[in-house]
Length: 610
Image (tube, helix red, strand yellow):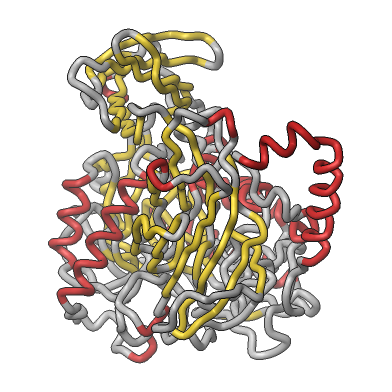
């Protein structure tokens, strides 16, 4: 590459120029608008934005982060690519966010264009180069060096391109076009709406997770699909590969810490069953992870290597001595208790400002005494799930709702009516739900799939639930959290606000309280909106709010014995106009007494053991 040649000849001078150039770039960016900011916003380095390896469940040593300032433009939907980019955007923060530096509305009639020049490291010569996008909402089209190399639809899953054939000897030029119709389209979108209010939030358009490069060999490991079986003391590890031949071999080394306890080999693309002597089980109380090194061998030579991990854990259901169907973790009755977690940020919207911030909410949830999180109608970056795996946090994963349906306030609630989606809408849902399940399959923290929430876009419930269960039989399926109920799946999920109530019971399935609470406490100086804030019930101070929470928890303890096997409190943080979080939206204030909340939460969880 030219730049390497110049640096070799005129290194000291050019390093000085580069330093001052980067300093100037950093000074040219600042968060947009005057909305709330988290403390992590001040820690952002535009030259190293979200600089941690993006996919720790399958990690290679070499990679290059493309996050940072990109050229940017908002255009009419059918307009040609801009000849000049007059704005800058800080990738990977969405266009509407403060941290993007743009903070502008886009809408269905416009598209956004990104432009980024980058250099391929000289040491990567002879390697294939993969271009990875963590997530782009919603339809992305990608050009490299004036050649369109591909497109992708789906706002919540990663996608990649092998860009090797399109690289030049010069600097590389990447262009990305994104269209997102928000609530004017049939695609999954979670809580995004063009006119945010109440429980509905600001749209998220464009790149919102890390963009990065990775060098691989001609033959390489593309994906790992890991399935534990604690009853057999074994784990299935399937390394899916690209461009391998029949004689190529995958070698799997399993480690307890740094100690190698098992080495096994199999033909490429053939699942390997690894037996574990004296297996160590994973739980929220003891989140033990086995380390894994996976090597791809061709003609006896190593051509690829990735590091990973897995956990030995089992999620199941079983009738207890009183005839109640209970959730079990590792073959023991286990009450799951946690908050509804929206995963929104006042300065980054869908995107946490830093990895420390991304981890913070999980750490705080542990401090509050919970053992589970319901990730509500959103999918997180890979690192969030790894943090849950490492910290010991069970996860219920929602499918983000969507379709061109009215919000639930405009429909008869729980009326048993399923939405009739168009064939296009159905196809989008099925594709994106499968993509999400494939993306998250190997993360042990995920124990429940939730295809629908409260009737939002709910359709063909029995068919979708049975497909989900067949596609991944290793987890439980909560077919419709608080929605239109059908005799399908593993769970009957009730919603009741503000206090807990067991108003339905299923003798054949697990019965859970999928949402309750929503106790509001607006705190001046920590509000997204100065007025018109919303909660299911509101109080004036922390003491009153904590007392109400404890009152609900005491009621919940009785209902656990009567039939509930899990409960989810609304919610982790305030979000925009909602003021019912344990924390304020910018995470600066705990709104309840953490010690008292933790104590009563532990008592709720222990109720099944009494």
